[in-house]
Amino acid sequence: MAEEKKALNFIEQIIEEDLQNTHKREELKFRFPPEPNGYLHIGHASSICLNFGLGEKYNAPVNLRFDDTNPIKEEQEFVDAIKEDVLWLGFKWEKECYASDYFQQLYDWAVEMIKNGDAYVDSQTSEEIAMQKGTPTEPGKESPYRKRSIEENLELFEKMKNGETPERGHVLRAKINMESPNMLMRDPVMYRCLHKSHHRTKDTWKIYPMYDWAHGESDFIESISHSFCTLEFLPHRELYNWFVEKVSKEGELKPKQREFARRNLSHTVVSKRKLMQLVEKGVVNSWDDPRMPTISGLRRRGYTPNAVRKFADSIGVGKRENMIDVAHLEFCAREDLNKTAPRVMGVLDPVKLVITNYEEGKEEWLEAENNPEDELAGSREIPFSRELYIEKEDFKESANRKFFRLTLGKEVRLKNAYIIKGEEVVKDAEGNITEIHCTYDPKSRSGSGTEESMRKVKGTLHWVSAKHALETEIRLYDRLFSVENPDGDKEKDFMDFVNPDSLQVIKGYVEPSLKSAGIQDKFQFQRIGYFCVDKESKEGQPIFNRTVTLRDSWAKKK
Image (cartoon, rainbow, N blue to C red):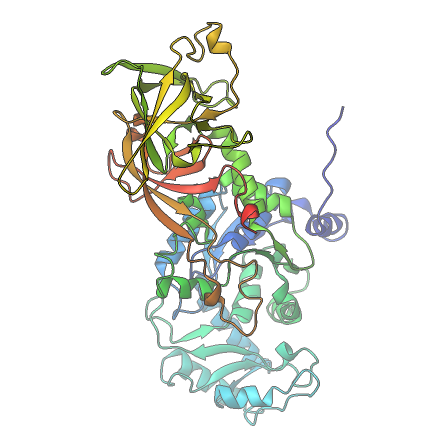
């Protein structure tokens, strides 16, 4: 049976129509254009997958271009982090470009626009300019400097470039239409004076282009055929096209801007400004804190590139903004890790289990499957002894018939090991259980082939040998915000909804094979969830981050 052909999304439909009417296939070229003023988040991951995915689909080049036009907020640290994120997701760019590569060309074009009467130097304050902009229902007013002579504009613009004008002293504005219904067309600012060192051009420039001026021209310089951006830039399209028309010639390929809707993720925020606040106010420890929706945070938490790409592909691109439940992202992580993560045993909230009829000093090494989903994963040996650790929640002194774990007088199986029966408990002075005593059936060992080993009991528990266990730090991460939409209440600050239980740090025990686990190694702690080795681990002392629980535990809390 032939595989069902996947329907085209509306972005692909645009490209297909252009291939039929206006573009040749060899003219297709895309770009991903982040501003290096912060770390990329899950929303950017969708944009990365869209643009680079189109490159793969149409065998077309994709540039990675940094829109670095604001030296106040941009840093090399962010450039490096963005490159790492794109590569981690499995994509390679055709060229690494920067808007700052084109500063001279942009300046030269701006000079030509002044000469052609399409731009002028305005000496008003930003507040005065804003007041003259008008409203969506009222036209703006022309600047008193709009009719400056070309000679004076050229002289002032050169002084701006040379740093002879103080910051906020002048701006260069495009001369378009102060009565346009699109307020962005009401003589937008093209350049402002900024005497700040740039992370690449250093102190060469004293003026910097505004985003709207630099972005479309950069696309044009790089021969980008299609410029895809989020819906907030729809009103900018008219200005984008106007600027490109001013620098292009008849017959030259012009980039085509089209917009798609953001996909917001529940229980988090994706505004760079708000993510910055979380870092600066110490709500999280860093940009790559595993609670953050940044790509680096997801990576550190243990998400795989496949899981993130699957998520981006499954939510697709649309024309309307909507909220995606973070549970869907977690589902994609579980689905991928289930196929690839080795199974191990770890106990997070331990109580000691003593097998009273097991010989003291004796130990066995039992065979355990590494991953039942992967035939090539093989097996390993795990140590078994008289004293074990099990989870406290896996035992009750007395329980009803629906409790299928260990209780007094009933049998359960220890995974990969023996059937045991609860006999008695030892308690401290406060009445807390300190030890559980049980007996085992020596003929019931898993995989031994005896009749007793085939005997069925309703419960199976994970465990670790107390003698061999590796004590380790385990970080239990949960959703950063306690409500679906932290930005949804206009009367409260998003910080009011920070989940106080988004991180719990505990000491647990894991099987000794994990002593050699390396940074970013991923595992399924059987019956608990998926975990990843954190970068703060030391040799022989792994620290584990919980990626996701084995099932959606959040749904039970609601």
